[in-house]
Image (cartoon, rainbow, N blue to C red; front, side):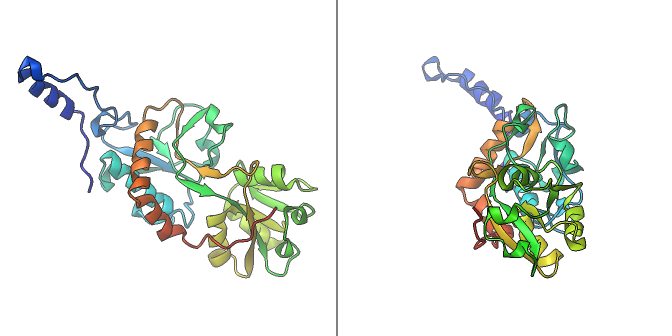
Length: 282
């Protein structure tokens, strides 16, 4: 367990300095804005974290963000610990994906839900530094025309679909540019059912989610390939905050520590270790 940082440390140091000889005085130190009890939180003493429901694997396990299992649940608890919160001081709230990045006040301190950092979204909300680099993946049923695709051009003549307001949907329209408009679904469950029903030839999701869909949820399906969605730049997931949140630098500091000490890599290895060896589509 890491030590809780407290803003009280600064006044105590200043008090001690006041008793010291004049020649030994040191310059005043600014109060630690990232001390646990100085953090600007929705509910004082509690770190309130948002995510969608259902909470899909491998980002969460058992549709239960509170168990600390799954990549994003584990990252959230690791960040909370770095900020000085115990597990029982982290409270989860449900935030539909499609509303998380709308402008306005938030009832959470940050949201973690495979939300890609984008310039468009960053105009109305703030993001942490990226905590995971994601690629888009194409999922199709074995034996279908889509399963035989070896390039993005091969996919252009097919019926494709993805969850509304996701970078997967943007990747279809902007990168694949299909001949017919893609089908748009309220959530991933609806997209999966459409694939099974034959309403679409293939669906898109981020690569770790595609692995889970193919390996666990849709029997006899395959991952056709992966690609980066926007101008070949790497897509990253970030934690989402209310615009101008003063909590962002503190969470970035926590993420930097978790990255430097290897914790973030360990969490990724534990929950996302299988996302390799998928063909690149160009």
